[in-house]
Amino acid sequence: AQKKKDDEAALQKRKTKWEDECVHRMSRDEPLPAISYEDWDTAEKKKEEEAENERKKVKKAQDDQRRLEKERLRKEAKRDSDNDNDDDDSDEEIMKELQKQNLRGYKKTSDGKTTSYFNHEQTAEGKALIGDITPKRLESGGDCSTVRSSAAESAWNTAGTWEERDTTEWCTEALRKRLLSTKVTTTTPGVTPTSVLYTGSIKEVKDLSGDASFATASGKKKYIFDFHTELSFQISVPDADFGTNVNSSDETDVTVIGEGTLNIPDVCSTVVGDGNYDVEVSWKKRPPTDDSGAFECANLLVNATRQSVNQFVVDFNECY
Image 1 (cartoon, rainbow, N blue to C red):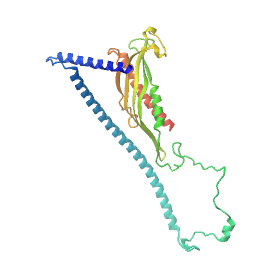
Image 2 (tube, rainbow, N blue to C red):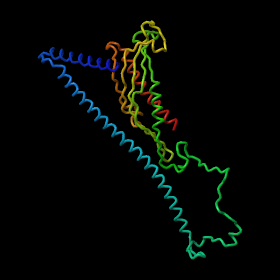
Image 3 (cartoon, one colour):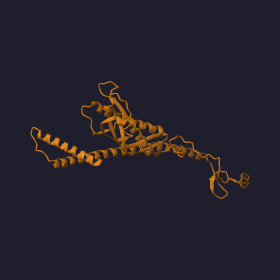
Image 4 (cartoon, one colour):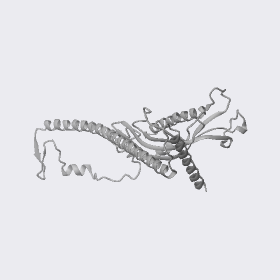
C-alpha cells in the first residue's frame, strides 16, 4: 500500500512539473505550442537517462583513478621494503666474501670430500664423548614466541618486510558507527539561543561499500581505504504543540521539515586527509525556500559528516 502511495505521489509530482513546463512555454515572448504529457515524459526520461549515464561515466573514471592510486601506494611501499632487503643481502654477501678471502687452504675428509682446511671432522672417540645429540621434542616449558618489532606486524615478519592486512570488515563497521552518530543543532537566525532549535541528523546508512587495508614495510605503516556511502538525513524542529522552549529527546515531539540523502562517492585515503571530496545533497522533502535556518542546519550537517569521516580515520590509525 505504501509503495502504491509513493508511486502516485511521484506521478503527481511529474505531472506538476509538466504543467509548469507548459506554462513556461506559453509565457515566452514567442510562445511555443503546448506539449503532451506523453511527449514531455519521454523527453524527460531521455534527459534523466543521459544524466545518469554521465554520472556513471564520471564515477567509473574516479574509481579507476582511485584504483591506480592505491596500486601506486602498494608498489611504493613494496619498493621501499625490497630496497631495505637488498641492503641487508649486500651486507651478507660482503661478509661472505671477506670470509672467503681469509681462507688459505682446503683438505679432504675421510669420505673423500673437499672442504676448508679449518673444517673439523669428529673422530669416533669424540662422538662417543658427546653422546646422542638427536633432536628431541620439548613436552612443555618451551617458549617459541618471536618478539615482534611492531604490534602491527605478524610474528613471522621480524625482518619488517612488506605485509598487507585486509581490515574491510572492521573499517566498515567503525565508519558506519561514526556516520550514524552525526548530529547537529542550530538556532533560528536572529532569535535567542533558548528558542526553537533546528536539529539535523543522520538517520540511516543506506549503502556503505568498499574495502580497506593497512600495509607495513620497514616499520612504516600505510593506511588504505576506499568507500562509497549513501546516507539518509532529516532536519527537524520541536513540535509546535510543545511551545518554543522545548528540549525533548523524544523524536515523537518533533516535526520533520526536511529530509533527503547525502551521497559521498569518495571516502578514500587519497582525498579524505585534505577534505577535498564531494558530499552530494539530494532533497526528498525540501524545506520552504525562505526557511534559511533549515538550509543552514543542512550545511552544518554536511560539515559534521566530514568530521565523522575524519574521526573514523583517527580510529583506524589508533586501532592498527
